[in-house]
Length: 476
Ligand code: PFF
Image 1 (cartoon, rainbow, N blue to C red):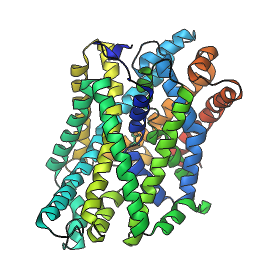
Image 2 (image 1 turned 180 degrees about the horizontal axis):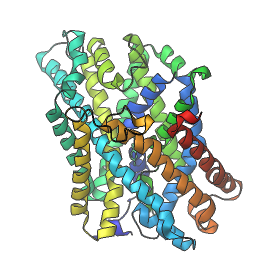
Image 3 (image 1 turned 30 degrees about the vertical axis):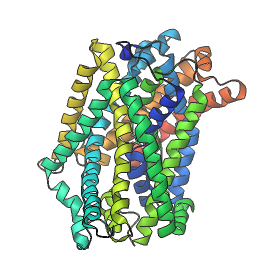
Image 4 (image 1 turned 90 degrees about the vertical axis):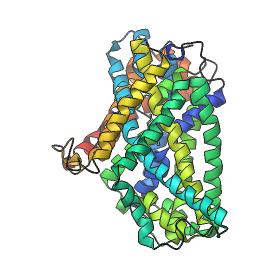
């Protein structure tokens, strides 16, 4: 059907396959690691409220834009080719594809640190797995990970990992190799198969742990924390974070949705599919909050602990709760599944571009991109050790204090994703051929006008303002 699916391969075998893969792309570390962390740091309910508004008014319409551009892009499986093709069909400059280029580059960069963080998750999969199986075989009650050890020993697990660049490197390599192994096999036999196993397993684990937390943890307090908005705690930076998080979590601005969209058959209705992706992603983020905060509150931990929440605070809770070894293991396994389906989509975008651009086969293309991204990830790891003084964008106030990983994370999330979103919303809203787009989305009448209004007016305006104030906070 399309160039990156050469070699007799087909696109998705069904609409369900596409929906699962796209939800797999969206649901990831962003939902389980970043969303609760950001909500915790920004006062809970008010942040959740702004986040949901951003998803409905900007994120969801943009998901449809990206999938639609992918499918409309006449046989190109890569973000640049697709946008260029739609521009050509619309008789406007092919230069709009520069925003597709921004997406491919963003995906490559995000993958580099995403794999490092997913390596930390793997570290805890192994530790909690060893604890779980250890207690199974020793006949000890499943009382918790590292039973009987002082709390510092558990808190120290993260420190130990950070003090060992080799361990981080190995885990990063293991995760990247797993992602590569799946993408190299292809869309149908690799990406689709992985999603169809991992996503259902993910959902079962998520629901089970949340139910467990609801019965054993402080569920009422978690509900109040997530759903009672205290708008006095809402700063402009928090709004900027909410929009950036919406983009990151929905996998916008990073080639994944355009590329996945290009493998979709012409019979699939895109608008309801976009709705399902956005709803599932937001639902999982909120469920993840409802899974994590009861445990956090019951164990008397600080909800605003920041990025350490998952890796440092929760293992303490697992140590003391009933069946903690089992829950801890299931919890980290769940994050690993979510991270893997996302990293697959991050790799696929640049790989599809490499296949199309250099005319090489999928396997070598996947190896080259994964290796290059791995190397950038190594720089992120060195940022915790030998290169801890390196400030990549030190001249820029908002990045003056951030290490390599946080700088790449911040630059892609705060600059590149919104910029690509800004460009493509203007392109889809103003420049692309209206009839072409209308036919692709399948929307008619008022629904089409509403969608186009949001894409043409609200998205560029809101994203522009948030970009400006997020990047130059002193303007406020
Ligand atoms: N949406 C993923 C998450 O929330 O973890 C991250 C991600 C995947 C971002 C794919 C961008 C992307 F293209």
